[in-house]
Amino acid sequence: MKIIPLTIPTPFYVGDVNVYLIKEEPLTLIDVGPKTDEAANALREKLQRNGVLLEDIRRIILTHAHEDHCGLAKQVRDSAKNAEILVHNWETGHLFGRLAREEHQNLMTRAGVPLEVFREIQAIYKDVSLLTDALEEGEFSELKDEMQLEFASGTLKVLHTPGHTPGSCSFVREANRTLICGDCVLKRITPNPIISPDPINPTRRFKSLAEYLVSLARIKSYSPTLVYGGHGEPIYDFDEIFNRYIRAIDERQKRVVDLIDKNGVTAWDTAQKLFPQAIGKDVHGFLAISEAVAHLDYAEAEGKIVVELKEGIEFYRKN
Image (cartoon, rainbow, N blue to C red; front, side, top):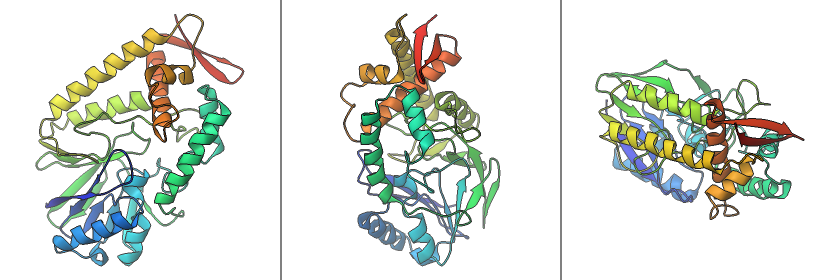
């Protein structure tokens, strides 16, 4: 099975996104890049360098529905004469903006985020949402855990690997233990667990960090020889990355718990202390809040701290 990485430019601080061409029938793209002219031109040009026209694509698979990964899905589908789009049904970014719904505001309110700060972040993501064309129900098919994606010379197995987002998926070629992991595994940065409503009960918060650790362990169980991430270089030493991630998470857990006092703090308080340079700077403020919430949720689940709801806001304190 021939997997060809294509680096596509994005307007985001993370830099280029990796799109993967599976060059055998049915010709498939895993992720597509953001909806910008620069990205669209780069995708078309790099496909042509590999002897493929955009019109030849028959299947579009999304690791997750963030704008830098899914933005061009509709354009590619239309250019390719109705190529099939597949995405996990716990994803929502291909349907509406990241902070567009009431449940998103409710989660941020519970985290102690002031309304004016939420409105500022919401406005930023309203602009970011323009980098993807929303899909309607019925315009895509569902990726399901452990389903087999068939190609001429073999299959890729779908692994539901939630954490970065609820519906994040990875894909494993079991014959040679090669994985394509989207933003679940990145060589040089630790993925952000993004604050999201729970897909089963949107009034609750998705426990992103706990789910992410399970996903990492699941990927490790395949003893990967090669991991392709959503950004940066391929990974040939997954165990080293895995151990680095676990150390980083443990260190941040300790720091978060140390910030908790007996009087109680909110996730917003914690984010400001953890990432003072990020607050008020584009999407970084939202990522800082997401990181704080994820670690507080995990610390509470592990019994390191307790949480109390006061007037609709969660306060964390040490036992």
